[in-house]
Length: 473
Image 1 (cartoon, rainbow, N blue to C red):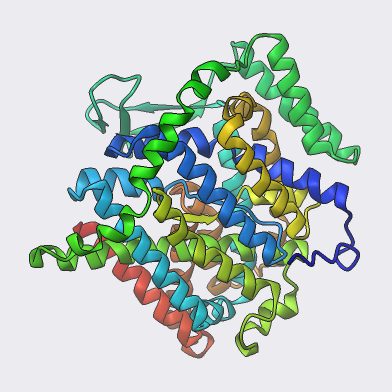
Image 2: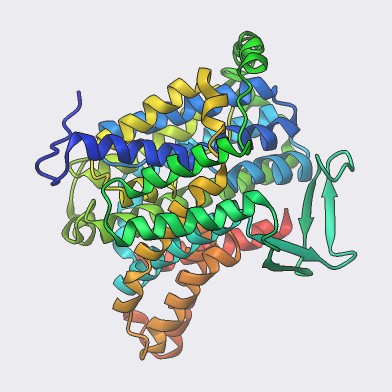
């Protein structure tokens, strides 16, 4: 079943397992965060926790079959779109939203099987590929700084909206451009530990200590436990585990049975189609960005493989198989009761730790299976202990910026927008959209339309339409 070919990819079992553990602890936050977001729609909280773990395990297992070191789980951003836009904003039930996710997965599977996704990747110019890779690095580092708790946001009066029950501790705050970021006062023990953890990982990395990332995460967690900064609550969790499985049973398959209700009201059919379109476009390009950003720079996907992708048939290469695995995961996840399952950008942490094959993914998948029972142990690893891994990954992924011709503004302007707007708007797909749009605009303005690949032009139009649709819904 598995053909990892460790020698071929110049790795070994120990390195791959360690990389899988790093990937897991870096993205394990999704277990509790996904539950906090999706349960607001009415999906039972216990069911969401189990659905998150199961969807992540199955999705990541398919990556192991593709022999790539990527992990999948319900995507951040997509789960917020599910809750706050589709359910709260548009008034769809959570059952109908899950049905949309299932349809989105089928669409993604179709465009993958028909090689449309391959042609999209092949149409992206080298300068934008470099910018996307570096941009993902900057985006990952920003996530790390945020997870470390080093950011504060100050919102001007009247520029924010509170969603929920009105309690600041349980409600979600949506702030406008009046929110200004800044560094927090480092005057608490967790914040001091965050800074110490970042310094520790940086020192271990520059000294080229084997397993530096995992060693730093474990050391920081242990130190935090000694100071009482982490807690383990097995009794409460295990007591409710049986009920959680019962809740999961009531949610399983709803994404399919709710499909007819989406089209029962003719006045909402256009809205349903527009929403599914937004789901699909974001899901597809989040994955494409992650694969391009991490795959080319580390050699997981060779330059030749990416450049000649449009000429290959079927699913012969690792990238082809990885795209298929990602496409299948969304529909599978919706069956269990969670929003879009997508390839996680935090996989870059495991890749930075040396992960090169599906053994890394298999290790992460097993961890998610165990997390259904050992969730309290998993969640005891504080985010400030894993955040430094994301910051270090950002440093490693910034290198492709040097390959961009910054003297040619038709290349530099699109590259700049692609590399920076991912972090500005907290979205890989939005960053890619800005890069595509400005690439087409600058080439047209300078009389170089032949440099725009037809597929890239079509996708750019779709991005523009998506922005228009989002403005209307």
